[in-house]
Length: 100
Length: 465
Image (cartoon, rainbow over all chains, first blue to last red; front, top):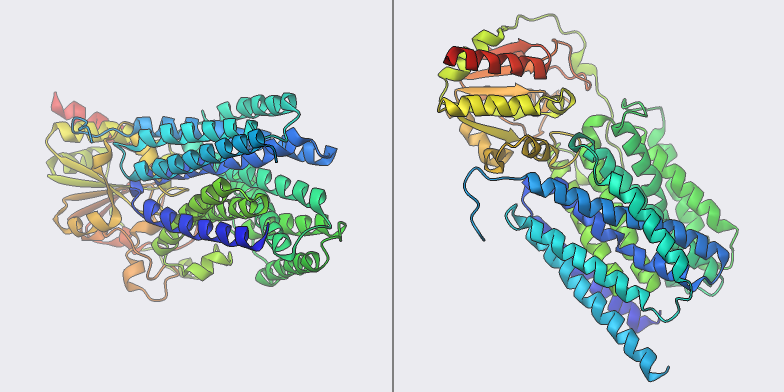
């Protein structure tokens, strides 16, 4: 990574952090548990780095580490989305549901 | 670079861009239960696009192994998505561990592929990635073990604990610095990981069950930050964005939790929490309390106009939430206004109580946050406390010597009548005495939460016929 792409990466990190703060501050405290399981699933996007490691197969160590990493991240993606959906299905209003 | 290769690179980056936008929308839609399920949909589509984009990557030669890993991960993931709602805190801790494991392994593999040809900046970020990742792996496993009660839940403290922890952190940082200066020192790398892993264990050892909401949020923030660091290492904008979102989410939740427990944020950051101060419980003589039977409790509740139920972790332990729903139904049918007061740290993770009550089919507009409902207690006929203790302790407002002094609490003592369902007068785990129990307007309902609420429900329906 040269210094200009480093600066780009820093810009993205800081701006994404700001968006994160602004968006997540508005999340209803009702939904803090599903929020955590959802961000957990989204965070498992790290799987893309692991997939490349496995696929490129540059050394056996990197392929083995990558393989375990893909398994761990995929289980987070699948499990995270599943349980978040299950939780959100349970939240019902006593008033008839109004379409937003 | 051939033109077609550049073309596929553009497609991959565009797919990542769409995925990033979908991830942000996904969190945006979590602002209300009405739109939250769109959020999942956006997250899933974004994830699918990102994975498909990655598979287009030009360097990939071995698709078979990737497919096996994806299938294996799905096989493990499905049961983890189907655990009971009471087990969600330990599931969440476990998934923090899995996420951090992925990040740590990828970081380690990248180190061995690139060493010794690593710039100083890159090596610093890589060290940050694997140290944060490593301590999150073992820390989250410890937290999950404590929540699942495989490990003792009691905080384990010893003399000089903070010193040992800081020493380990210092060693990890020193190893990182020498690796930054000499990125070819391959033998140092495993030691850095090892120190980070042990640091994670020691960090969680002194933490008790009541502090779990803060700890889980903090581990969430660490997992997010380590993923963002991985984004820097791999020069992946998508990963930086996802990591920053996850990190800020964990950070915000940690701040909310630490405010709700009146701990300073630095106190939380350095893991110096969970110290048990048992001084307050000692030397108390037995004071008289007033108790009531289920019949009396049912009579008082049905004569009330406004009731606020205060649930705590004890309700979850006793699995009483479905009986509480029946109580809610029975009282609502008689025209009693029943609401639920939710303290931010009630339960074992942020928002835990809301999920348990929602599972029991209690409408979410009946679940009210602390700040919103606290003003209503003086106009409330009955506050019914089920399995909550510290979050209702008036000593937090008045007694400067109390270990929880200054912690924001639910002002149940201001309602006309307080009823507390509790097994016995035994002070809770933290050993802090609760003056609420000795007030003139407090009635103690001794018994198991599920059984006692069940008896009240029976009385209510019996009296109706």
